[in-house]
Length: 223
Image (tube, rainbow, N blue to C red; front, side, top):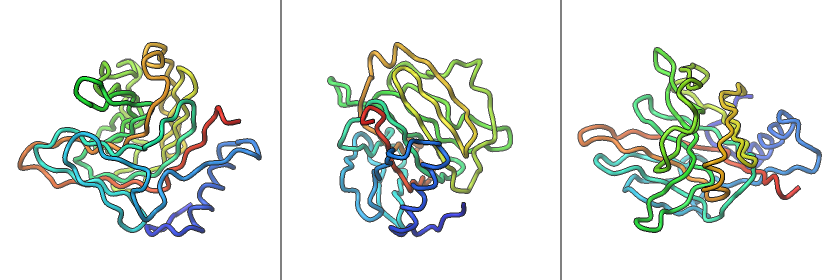
């Protein structure tokens, strides 16, 4: 279904209704919006100096050269859930969405599982695999991180993330690219915030942007 860049309340409701049907969820399952389409209420920035703004019904993150990784994070924590969102990113910018993440005590560094966002380029890339941000590096084993082109460069891309116990599943544009069991990371990060990453870039590069819209979550333990 093609979605307009400016997301009205009605179109957002229709989008979430479609997701409920596509995911074959029970009749009483409900996705709750994480973003109201107008403000950043319910979100707080941690780390870095990248900027975040609301534009045309989207959250837009923009790089600041020389800044470390930046994260716009929910003020609520989530454990077992299903998360959906759409994302569009400049081809030269790496990004991601943190799940079950937290702030490290000694330096307030964001850490935890991250769902990779990356343009496919000519040879494919690693969009949808799971990385441990400041938490051990790649969680998806190298043998399973096969480059693919399910992420469409320069366009809006649909993600669906299901985190249930130690299992994390990820779909990119309705194609499942990840089905990961990671007991160690679940033990250390059983719950935490959702975070929208703007990756660092070197001085003299950028500015680059990443946009998110239609972010919604369904808590599995609420059923």
